[in-house]
Structures are given as C-alpha cells and as structure tokens.
Length: 79
Image 1 (cartoon, rainbow, N blue to C red):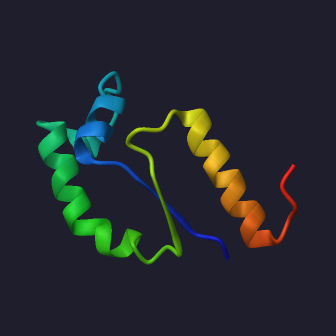
Image 2 (cartoon, helix red, strand yellow):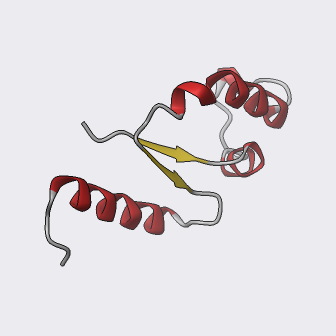
C-alpha cells in the first residue's frame, strides 16, 4: 500500500482555506486551530511511508510528484 503524507505548514493551509467557510473544525482562529490539529495529528501522518512537502507547490506540481512516486512504487516506467 502506498501511503503519502501531503504536508503543509499551518500558515499555508490557512491561506489555502481562506475562502472556505464550511470547516467546523476551523471555527474561530483557523491558523491557531490548524497549528493545534497538526501538533495533535502529525505523529500519525508521519506513519505514511512517503511525504510530499506542498508549501511551495502548485496543485499541478503536487499531482506530478504523486504520479512520479506512484510510478516508482509500482515499478512503472516513466513516460
């Protein structure tokens, strides 16, 4: 099983979620809440066999990185 942790700092995650209003876990101060959630959950996220740090990446670049990782994991040739 390929498990990938797509990591993002609380600051970047808050900026990405800025326009989202329907996130009950982020009520109040989203940045503070994201920081708290990351501290509580990161040990579990780190159990994934791979991590892609997404802070400076576009969604397209994240997808490309996932494809490369999956191909390598599956033994597929790059195209």
